[in-house]
Image (tube, rainbow, N blue to C red; front, side, top):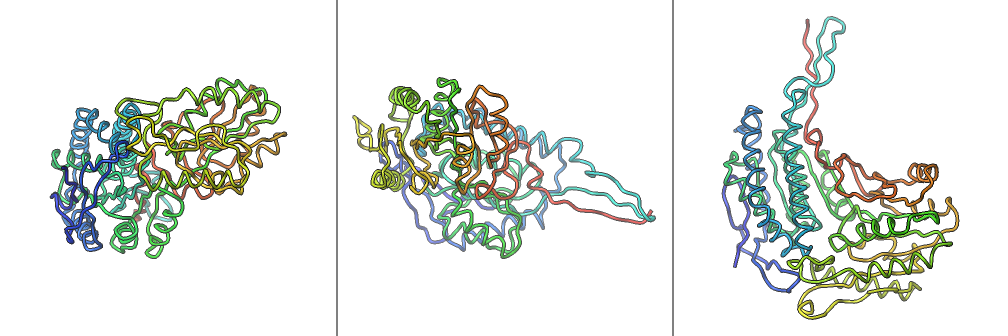
Length: 483
């Protein structure tokens, strides 16, 4: 049985308390390994190593950019060589279909490349911005690494999120401590095995395993950490932000989403349904950029519903290694959370058109599977509608007018994204401007777009991580001298 350890100061180490917990393959409900449960003291050891690396040794921070690029390119090549192996373990640990896991790993490789290219750009080597001559003094604006960065990630896209946090931080010259979700640490460990093989300087990359309530909170509160990057629920993000603000750290957060898809009566229904199914059921719905809330103009309600049920009924469900459309739910507690929300919604008047239950056919009876689910006659006071589900479920609400559609779309605390389906260019542009969200798709859906996107409202705080985002891990300094 594999044992997953912390990686601190260039060495694999067990937790101080020698406590472990089981890592579960959710498709089979089988133990696939044991992971260290770190303590606050373990977190402090990682912080000390990262500080020594950045502020004292400086071997990564002060390395010539050309040498740093070569080392990171070696890392990228190793990821490419091992991408099938990484994807396999991502699917087994998180529950997503194998092909989706491979898509995530490929996206991570491209993000890593982009971060390295961005850091190596000529503008990064020289003083950034304008050089100013004023009142007999010369002022230059330069960028430099922020310092000790911490990345805390959720279980939705484990490997991709790890790279989104670590690659730009490293490319910019920082030292980093990464804490993956306790549910899905396996591919983060594999990434750090690559760092170790590529001989990155001691202390510039550190991995610590354990629960967010203790280890994550200690990392966020530490006065010896300069930046917190966090991806996860808004509730957990608030806790991390409050911890970070005590020491006025920089924060870089991507939080919950609950995005609407508005389908107007003139929409191409086939296009809308294809996009909505991708948005709602990719990665079993565990996607902050997904489209779980469907707003349908009342005049096309019935034909849309019939076509949607037909399309969703055809989705396959099964073992992630068999490449179905829908894989396993990441854990039994999350599966039960979803099923309880389904029951509560029905009690409040929602009508289940499809699914709404655990899927137990054949070998799936051993694991954590939920049939793709559609609820009609939903209202915002239902938890299933108002909160992020992170599961394979669609909720449907009706509207009559454009104004009502926009009101329903914005009737949420979150603002990651939204989609609009209509043949009217003027209507689509009006709606896109009116929806309070960071990304809007019109008659399409592409969640892995390369642009740097910031969410709105309670979905995002500070700059979101994206491919060209080393600036989020840089500090700006002005140097002034007499002429």
